[in-house]
Image (cartoon, rainbow, N blue to C red; front, side, top):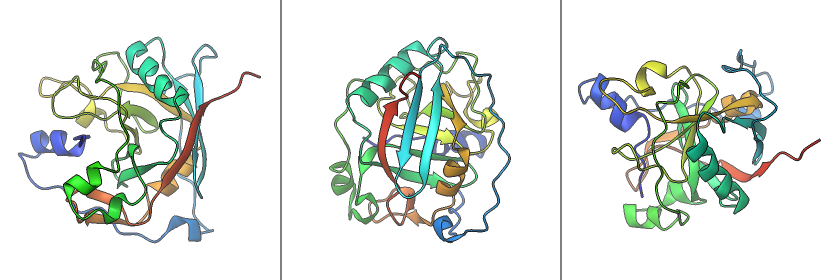
Length: 229
């Protein structure tokens, strides 16, 4: 099922329903050996009690993520169940916006070439039930944070997640106009990998009608709990 992450809902409210700008079409960052890393400071302090997972992105590298189990218990439990089930193995980042976020965790290879909505939906993995929106947990959608994608109604998140590549606190945090998007983790190592992913070449609209779909699949090989040292 299509998840209206960030822009489809929030931008419509803030910008009076105007259309989103077309995602930038840039060169493949894997070929750019001179790329300068962007500054990244973890938005929240580390806590050894929090679980940590490692996401392996094919051809790009590893991203280490701290999960806020105390602040977002329902969301973290749901995410870790998918991790334990190896649900994310072989999924893709299917929505990439260099000035916003990168979204994935549900669809598989070939999504960009799907000819219609039905064909695209068949490339999605089976999910469990939806979960409660924990957006009002005091955590903000800052650069480097991990949050849940959902449909327009607040309690509709399942397996899809996104990583904020810029500060989206004003757009995505709870407000008088929005229920917000639940932050439940942060990148603690590998933000340079995320920044390379956000620069992949993306189409304005796929044949199936989805926005900001990478032309070439960006594959999540796996997400696993970090082994205790």
